[in-house]
Length: 272
Image (cartoon, rainbow, N blue to C red; front, side, top):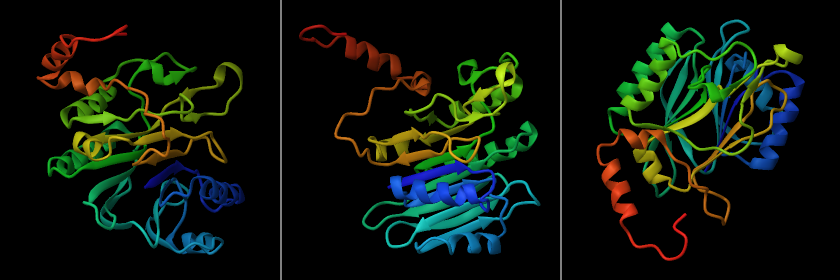
């Protein structure tokens, strides 16, 4: 399954229409998550009529010219069952024939850290239910200094620590990715230009157990100041996915025993 998540900054503009068509032709995602669509349900209907695809759709309408989330699922394969929505996320159950269900959250987090706390609380309650869960979208925040270039120097504020605590407390993993290092640019010139990794995919450990060959691609920016994210639950490559160390492993009590056990095993040739 392929999921494409994108802060498109307006889904009615001509540049979006052509870019949406191009992304669909190249990557053939079964599910789209679109953020900052600036669309009503009626407006989405007008946009989708331009495409010869039968979509199942769900809309969180924008407030004026801001916000808006759209979930699209191509009929004939997977199905989505939305069970909660708000201005910051859409929660849905993903069903595929002959496979166990799992939960997908399409996130468009507020820029206000107090409002984001509501999102963290909602997701914490969900994850406590034990469902395999992936959370994908625009988090409007970065975790560390390496996720930013340009602008003011990175400072480790209380709200950034809250984001990290949310991940650690729930055993969530920031998924490895390929492609550009940053997902957003303010498109300014010279020293005023800022790049940040605002968009990401994170998942629970049981989701990772379910989809060990996942792949996340941060695609080049197109018709927006945000990169689209392409998440594949099964890698389309015949090559093994590169090893990626996950910081959350260090929070597991048994992690050091596993490392000591691995280093004690006999190795032929160069162990490194």
